Image (cartoon, rainbow, N blue to C red; front, side, top):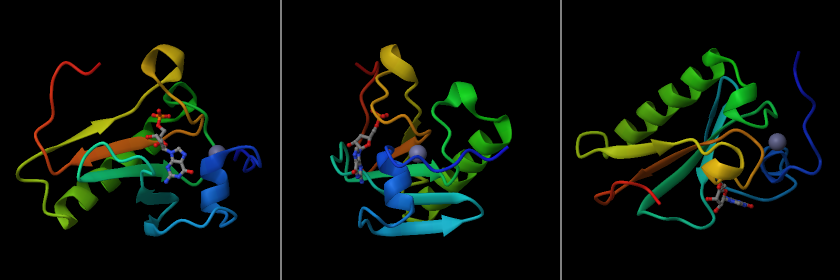
Length: 116
Ligand code: 5GP
Ligand code: ZN
């Protein structure tokens, strides 16, 4: 069952146009826009159109579609060969701040490990 868009969710409001944001890719239920507080030269958020709070609530198909979009965009932006990082934060210990499933796509610099 499709969840309704949440009026309290910042990403739902970006997706419905009530928060103006440049959406750089939108196809097959997936949208991509720049993170407002970028942590790397490339820092994009890959977001399903459907309001799903966390990866715990998501089907494997939706997660796979987000990751396929991340791969495609990394290739389009010419960071695929040098490399990049995808991150899904989940809930409190994972550092999730926006409760609408999203994949961070980070690239354009060498990433450190382990993450904080
Ligand atoms: P989380 O910590 O939930 O994994 O990541 C949420 C991300 O959303 C953060 O990196 C934050 O900078 C970004 N973010 C929060 N509010 C907005 C917004 O209104 N617009 C955009 N483009 N990004 C946002
Ligand atoms: Zn939402």
